[in-house]
Image (cartoon, one colour):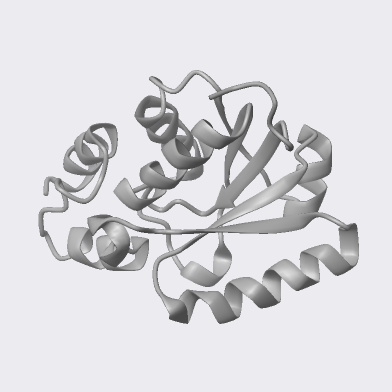
Length: 165
């Protein structure tokens, strides 16, 4: 479904460490709703040592979304709203897995709106992927567990190469 969309370009930012099936589901959903989707990864110091370095994340995200023509992948180290303006995105996309996600996401959305005028659209997970969280995947991988059913094939391959899971 393209053309006639109210908003042509949206930004989906996150640390994506690692990019998982819930993230992919959200990208597929918004790619059907908007003309262009920019998926932007950044390093979040609050999340500790990353499982995959930022260049690795960009590579596996790009491989994971390669079949979706209207998706672009990038990285950033600025405020999300500055990136939104720089790429010409009209709105920020955020996924919600559970009601508990809403409180922190809403606070961030209100702050982004206050400092930039850029709105945030929340997209709830409606699938079996709603239990997946990157923080759990990082822990499972670091302890030698298998996350192959929770991440796209490109991510599973990279994690296996790096951690021999």
